[in-house]
Length: 140
Image 1 (cartoon, rainbow, N blue to C red):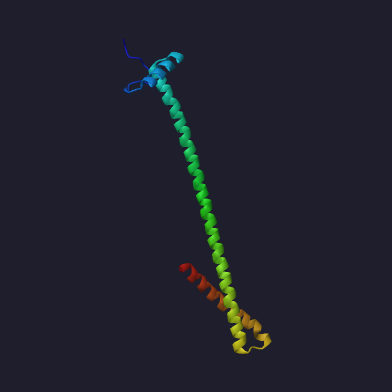
Image 2: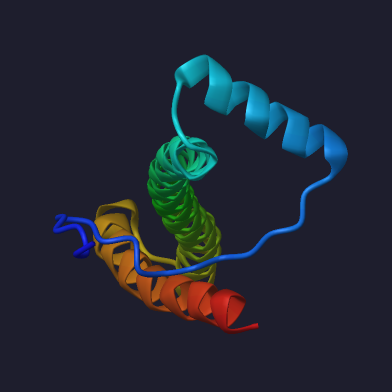
């Protein structure tokens, strides 16, 4: 007898041990489906393989979703840090501005019309001091 020609040759051999119950289930399935025990085993492999592929796709989808969630959390944290930085700068600026303005008015005895010049000067100084204060805060 010549060997069968097929698209999927069965040239790999596998020996397995089965319990009596497993053997009964295999015999039963082969009888019900009117096929060989080897074919029943191949059908089981195909079924489990299909489930494994679905599980793998599910896991990949889950991993992609978690990556997206991680990116969203990171973006939100960066936005929060930026807001904290802006808030800290604003607080430092306000404090430095008020202190410098009060000092200029008090110490220099400017007439009321010169207050605008003192105010602009105080804003310039406060901007520099606020920037340094915030920089020091983030570096610590």
